[in-house]
Image 1 (cartoon, one colour):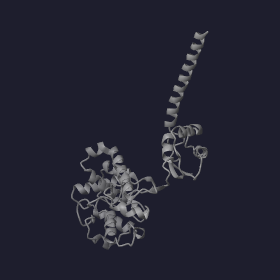
Image 2 (cartoon, helix red, strand yellow):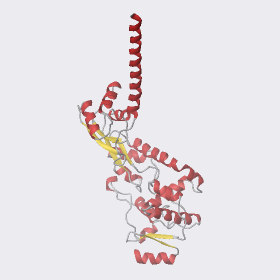
Image 3 (cartoon, one colour):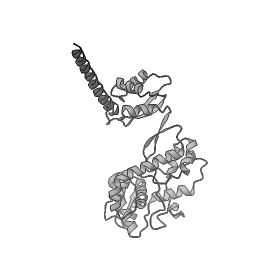
Image 4 (cartoon, helix red, strand yellow):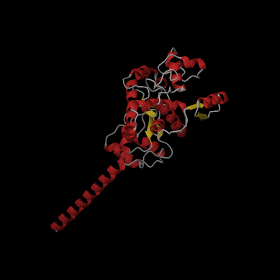
Length: 327
C-alpha cells in the first residue's frame, strides 16, 4: 500500500514538474513575443498613464490599444518581476513585447515626440527642441551638419541636448552601415557622398530626379565644373545673415535673387569649383542612395521652374532658354 502511495506521489510530482516546465517555457515565449498589432497602421501609439493607475487599469488601456496580446500575461509579468509602473505620456512602439513594454512604462517620465525632417540644417533641428537643450545640441561634439539622421524620435523631457545629438549621430552611423558595400565600391568618399546627398536633398523630390541630378553633379565635379547648385547659395546666404535674436526668429532657405550669386562664401558653388566644405543639410537615405546609384545622362544643367517641374538641358543655350521660359 505504501509503495502504491509513493508511486502516486512521484507521478503527481512528475506531472506538476512537467506542468511547471511547460508553463515556464510558454511564459518566457509569451512575454518576449511582439504584440498582435497590425504594423501596417502605425509605428507608435501614444499612451497616457495617469497618476495612481493600477496595474489592472493600465492593462485595460494597453489591451484597448492592441499593445499587449494578453492582459493576464502582462499583469503576471509585472507582478513576478516586481515592476513598478509609472505615470507618464508614453510613445509606445506597436511591435513591442511585454518585457520591453514594462521596462518602458517603468521609467516614469514623460516623453515627447520630435520629427526632424530630411533637408533640415542643424539649426532647424535645434529649433524644435526645448530652449534648455538648443545650445547644448548645437555645441555638442556629436552635432555635425549632414550627419544628424532625420527621423522621428521620442525623448524624455529630462533628455539634454548632448544626449539628443548623440542619438541622432548614432542613428546615422547605424543607417549608413546598410550602404557599406556601395560606399566601398564608389570612387567617392563617405564625406563626398554625404555632401552631394545633402545638395540633392534640397534640389529634388522624387528618387528619379535625385538620381539624374546626382549624376549631373558628379559629372561636373569630376570634370572640374562648378556645381552651380542654388541650395548651397541659400545655405551661404543664411550663414551670412545669421543675425536673428534667437533660433525661433530665424528663417531658413530663403528665396534667391540674382545678387545672391555674388555672395562671398566657400559654399558659393557658382564662384568656386568643387564641393562645399561640409554638407548643407541632413539628407535622407533616398538621397544618399541616389548619389550611390546616380544616373548618367547627356545633361549638364537643370533648374526647377515656377511650375514646380525640374527641367534638364544639355547645353548652356538650352539652359538659358529654360531660365527665360520657366523662371
